[in-house]
Structure formats: C-alpha cells, structure tokens
Length: 115
Image (cartoon, rainbow, N blue to C red; front, side):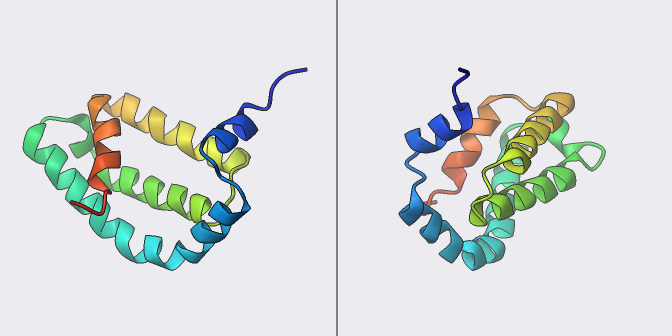
C-alpha cells in the first residue's frame, strides 16, 4: 500500500480539526493582510536581488495572484488535489523565472508578526 503523503504531511504539521477551525476563522485576516505582506516581501527581495527573474515579464504579479489563491485554499482547509496543484504551479513559476531558492525560505520569515 502506498502511503498517503499528503495526510502524513498534514499530520506532521498538526493540521487537525482545531487548526482547521482556526484557519477558517482567519480567512478574512488573510484576505486583508496578505497583499501587504507580499508587497513588503517583494520589496525586500528587490532590495537584495534586483535582477531576480521574479521582477521580469509580469512574473511578480502572477506570483502574488497565485499566492493569494493558494492562501485562500489554506484558509478554506482545502488540502486536496487543488492545494497540491497550487503549490506545484507556484514552485514551477519560481523555477521558470530563475528565482533563487533562498527567497522561498525568506518569504516565510517575512510573514512573521515580528516584522
């Protein structure tokens, strides 16, 4: 039997029913705050890596659109195929644009409440 890696990942991240309820409650917060968080993040990336492929040919706008859609899936607790496809498409966009991997990790820190 093949393991359900999505279920395993959700278990490792402790995405249980209380977490799902909290995510659903945060849906309006995400919708309101994420555009500003993403703008701040891309300002930082541009400061340190102005030649990044994310700033060419409308890629940044597409990345923001994709991230907002992805977080809508998270807030809706839709962790099925749509979620997995969303994550894959976003990674592929970054790879095509030549975005350095350190910016993937750096983006998570930028959303911290201490920033």
